Image (cartoon, rainbow, N blue to C red):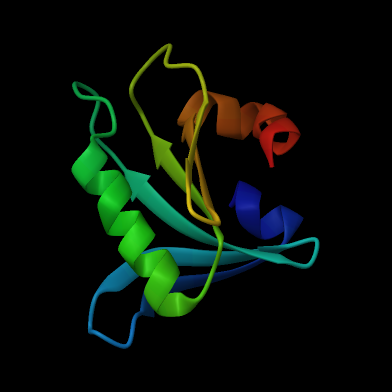
Length: 102
């Protein structure tokens, strides 16, 4: 809901190889792959980052946001080649402060 109030959201986007990203978000002329991890006990792992990187390369996007529920986890930014992945907690997302990291 919050992302759709800030820009256009397309849900369940299929890549050319049949994989499915949770959403694509169009915000201020940039496109972001959105991946939502809805578990509380573990942080985002490197294999999940690689999964999002795969979505980004097949969809030809350079930005992504991974949203997770793990409590009290500060935002992290992961760079690889020309790709940028922002990893944010849902609480930071709902406060709107994640926009400072884009």
